Length: 316
Image 1 (cartoon, rainbow, N blue to C red):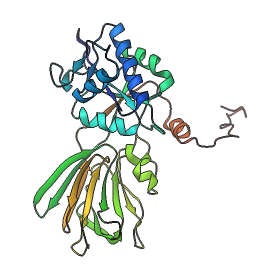
Image 2: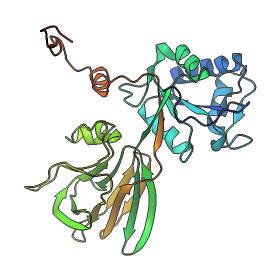
Image 3: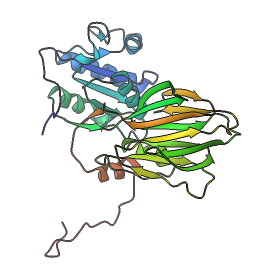
Image 4: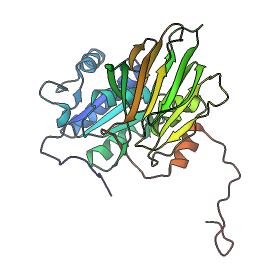
């Protein structure tokens, strides 16, 4: 199915461009996209900060809209993101609650969330102009930090929520809880609670499993835990994960969500993570299997593979 779930198209098409404007290659790509959209009769939309950066880089750019003035996030059709996974996470934060999907063009290193590469940029924009893409929804996390009964911080995460020690020389003492029941307590560097999307990010680096995006699940991965039982856990999407920073912790902890939103955690604080009702929508240009994405993004060795044999002995 083409363009599944994209909002009803009106006469005005609002396409937001999010770019890593601290890099020259990203600025050049953003200027290229702006010109291509303008040549097609559209007015590109930018955040106020990126509008200033782009105008400073290319004074010839005219007829640009600033997000939040006349154009609201609910008016957006799609978001073209130019950069690495960090830029895509920033775009997801900028458009949180908006139904417009994110289409990433990788200008970073791995770019696991990105759908195309820099050399395909012109064709990617043409696909956007033709509305020739699919949309898939990715689970996100609802994250609350509490002290006693008081909620001191509430946010969300697409990749992961991480509780880490605030001081390098001190260990974090925690107890983990699943569905309201304690499971284990230990000293550690931290705990990662992740979505399937985040299973190829921080959770992966910490030794967690890779979980296919089609699987509804949440992960909990301890970081350098001093415990006999500190294995990565995979639970159902309706479960509730919690990590308590024990009073015996010397120092404090810190909560990070997607490496962007943070909150200090004093001893006695408790972080509760559930599935959020608001997903992030990603635009896809093909329906290739996730296995192929893993092989491509991580440059995995598959030399020598011949594939499964058919009933007559032929390779499929």
